[in-house]
Structure formats: C-alpha cells, structure tokens
Image 1 (tube, rainbow over the protein chains, first blue to last red):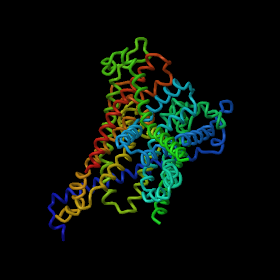
Image 2 (cartoon, rainbow over the protein chains, first blue to last red):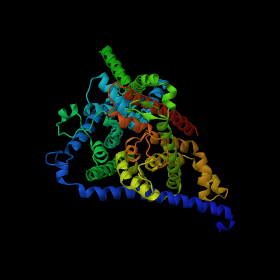
Image 3 (cartoon, rainbow over the protein chains, first blue to last red):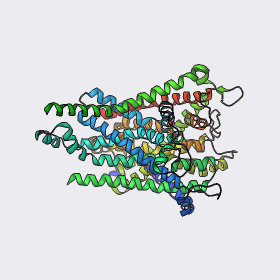
Image 4 (tube, chains in turn red, cyan):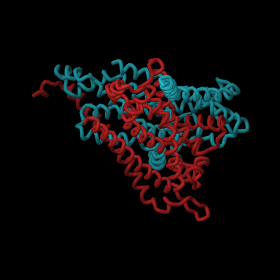
Length: 287
Length: 291
C-alpha cells in the first residue's frame, strides 16, 4: 500500500543504499572468513609436537618455537604485573580522589594520547629510555616495561568504567559507619571493580600477544630457551616477533603459518572470553 | 591515634596521586625524548633539506637524507586506505546499527572484533602470500610488493575501528529524530541515511580520524607488503612509509651515527603527525558528546 506513494527516484535511492549496505556487509564477513580459513588451512598442517616442544637448532636443522611460546608467557605475565597496579591505581585516583576537574581532564587527555601513539614509537622510545637512562640491554624486561606503558590506558579505562558502576550509596554507607577513605576503597570500591580489572587484563593480553613493532627493538629476537628470571634479562622473541622474523628474514613460511594459526586460535579464544566475562558480570550485577 | 590515621590517609592519597599522574609523566617523557633525540639530525641536515629532500640514501658514499618520499607515501597510503575502508566500514556500520536483526548483529560484531584482534604480522603474512602475487599477476608488474598492496592491507586493518566507532555514534542518535522522520512518511532506509547519519556526523568523523591514526601508525604489516625501497610514491612501485623507514634501518644503523639520528628525526615527524591527528580526533569526539 505504502509503496505506491513512493516515487521512482526514492525507490531507486532506497534500492541503491540497500545494495551498498549488502555488499559491504558481505565483504566484511567474507574477509573475516577468508582470513581465518586461509591461515588455519595453511598453518594447522604445519603444527607438530616437535615444533611446539623444542628449541631451534642449526645442528639438527630443526625449527622449534618453544622458546617463543615461553617468552610470550613471560612477557604477558611481567607486563600485567607492572601495569595492573599502575592502571588500577590511576583509575582509583580519578574516580575516588581527584576533585580538581582540570587535573582529571589532563590525566584523561594524557591517557588518550598514550593510546593513540603507534607501537613503533613506543618501541623506539622504550629503547632510548630503558637503554640509555637505565642502562638495560635488549631484554624481555625492557619489552615488558614498554608494553606496560602501552597498555596503561586500557587497564585504566576498563577499571574506571567498572568503578563508575559501583553505587554511590555503598560508599556513603561505609563512610556512615565510620570507615576512612582508604578502608572504603579497600573493602567496598576495589571488590567492585574486579570485572573491569579482568576485562582490562584480557584486552591487554590480546594486545601483548599481537604486538611486534614495540618489541622488535626492546625485547629483541633471540630464540634461546630460558627460565623465567634468566629470560627477563636476556633478549627473546615472542610468537608475533618470531612470525615476522621467520617470514620476512628467513623465508620459512611453513613455520610462520603455524605460528599465525596458533595466534589466530588464541585471538578467537581471547575475544570469546572477553565477551563471556562481560556477560557474566553484567548478569551478576543485575541480580 | 587520630593523627596517625590521618597521616596514613594522606600518604595513601599521595600514592594514588602519583599513580594518577604516571600517564601524564609518560606522555611528557615520550615527547621530550623524541624531541631531544630528533632535533640533532634535523639541525645537521637542515629542516628544509630533511623534510623536502626527495632522495634518501643513508648508506651511500655521499649520504642524502630527504624524507619527502616517506611523508608522501604515508599520506597517499593513508588516503588510499581511507578511500577504500571508510565506505565499506560506514555502510556496514549503518546496517549493523539500524537494520540488522539482533542475531546477525551479534555474529557480525564478533567477526569485526576478531578482525581488530588479529595481530598485524598475520595481516602482513597473508598479504605477502596472497595480495602481493595477485597484484603481480593481475597488473603485470615485476614485483607485487607495492603501495597498492599496502593500501589494501591498511584498508582491511582500519575497518574494525571505523565500524565500531560509527556504530556507537549511530546508536546514540535519539529515537525521537527517527520516529519523527518515519511519521512524516520517510521509509526506514531514507530515515537512517538522511536523519540518523547527519545527526551522528561528528562521531562518524571521529571514526574516520581514528582510522587515519591507525593507518599512519601501522608498521609491521606494511613492512611485509610494501617492498621498502625509498621511492617516491607510485601505486605499483615498492615504497617506504614513515613507520617502515624507522624500523627497517634501526637494527643496523650504528649508534651515534647521523643515520641513526635521522631515524629518530623521522620518528619525531611521525609523532607530530599523530599528535595532530589526536587533537582532531578529540575535537570531533567532544562535539559528538555535546550533541
């Protein structure tokens, strides 16, 4: 009925827009499917137990990525250890302590600036600061410190968001019972922001896993097998850096695709857990 | 007793203040370090020769340090990525925000956030083995590692940011606007494009600017598909971006040499670009919030 009153021109416009939207959405989805399918198809056949469980050796002409896996775990662990107290603390300052609006604006602007700086610049400045100023060598620790600065805005933002959802009446109740500010933060505010901290962790892990440019100059690209403390002080490649080195410098595409497939699966896993965690805490809050 | 408690509170307040100011400290340190280490080479080479010199030959017998090719490549590459990526991302965002049923929406949104999470080296690897040979065969050029390959990879990489930010802006458009338009006889599609989109234009502009920032800052994926020869930009030629100029020579440039210092100067130029983009982004975000 209604269609009869619409002119041809308008019908053409509507059809055109619908068509363009259709093409775009199909293109986007096809792209994702292609990327996943291509990487998994090329990578999974190359994943073997030997690849996962050994270190590379020129003598036996063998490539193994165990050191890279361990380095990745070390870097994730160390970075989170550094960034969590800093990020959560900054968020608590902003929502609980800061009264001056200008200070808040400056801090938030700084955080936005940090999240806009490309990773290659972090790598460069990390190298300059930690090597020149603190006399470090290319090491996992230098890499972790660089990544900690990079992930600071993420942890800060997610924590801040969840702090905002802690009802003001909880705080007032605790104050009314005679608790001091620190006690209120410890017993009421901190437990309330646990979901923000977990989301921040997951997002940071995803970002650390995918990071390469910032690590190339700070953490280096050695493939030696190390324990945790030894590893922190020596140069080491994470999975992403190893992928880059194997593909670009050595032309070992089979290994590169195997690593890419592992990274792809981990990315899917991280995205899923971020969504699930978000849903879980939302439900709990609504009860 | 009371004094002690007060002292404790003050100390803790101080600790949190320091933690809060760490971000500001980081930004300051990064800026200062980049400026300090970027200035010497620019001084020695001369600002005009550095920025507008057309030839980069850092390892030649008579070295020449002109970064115009890198600047132009970064600008063209980013512009190309925006031209391809924005229309696709924008249309997808309108569909997802307004027309898609909830199930489709959540599936596609999941796919988009996956796209955002894929490490850039994986994009580089896939581009290197599919896009680069495809360009070589399709356009009959000797090597497919070119500006075009980089543009396509960048367009894909900025899609998630554009889709997500535009969607947020579109979803924030007050329902009354749309209802009024529908009541006046406009069809849903007309309403979304002629009422919702203009109402969300600041947010969509922010999405584009964010995409520009992502594209100009990307290094590793481009490193793998752009060929890295310091040519003036041309669609089918091997090119070097500001980011890849820094990373490709950093590992072998000798400490304290003019070459290494010039690399820091390139980073400074890149940083200034990024700060400019950030300021623009903030401007649009603020306006979008006020609306």
